[in-house]
Image (cartoon, rainbow, N blue to C red):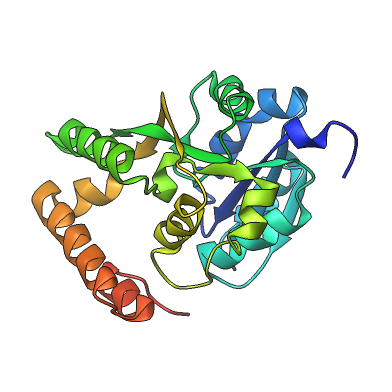
Length: 233
C-alpha cells in the first residue's frame, strides 16, 4: 500500500448491462479521479457494450462472475485506497461526498453510509426515502443504495460481502455493526426510482418488506432473488 493510502478512497462500482447509462455515470466521477480517488469498475458478465464504454473512464476494469457481492469483493481486493466506497451504477454521489467520508474517518468512524434521495420515482417516493434513512439510522443497517463505505481493515475483519444472490449489503452491515455503529451521513446520494416506477410504489415496498422478513426468518437468498426478479444466466 503506498504512502498516504490510509486516507485515500477507492470507489468500487459493480455493473451488469449498463451500456445505456454507464458513460454518463462514470463521467460524473472523473473530477474525483483527478483529485486522486481511484475508480474501479467490476463487470459481472455484461452482454452489451458496458465493458468497452467503461474501460477508458476507470482506473481498473475487472470482469468476474455475476453477483454484486462477488463483484465488489473483487474490486476491494485490488483497491489501493484505505477507504472503500461501494457505489451502485444507478446511484450518484453528492458533490461533497469525499470530504464527508474523510470527516467521518477523522471522527473515528470505521464505516458508514449516506442518506438517500430517490429520483424519477412515482408520487410518494420521498416518503419511502425518508423511511429508509430513518430505519437505517435507528438500526445501524445500511443498504447498497446508500453508498456504503468502510476502511479496508473493517472490511477485511468483517469477511467482505457474502457472495449470495441478494441481501449481501444487509449481511455486511450486520457484521460491521457488530464491531461499531455506522456514520450515518446527512449528505444525500441520489438513486434511481425506476423499480418503484415500473412496479408501483405500494407493491414494491410490500415486496421488499416481505423479502426482508423472509430473509430474517432464514429463507434462502437464491429463492429471495428469484422472487425479486433475478434471472440466473
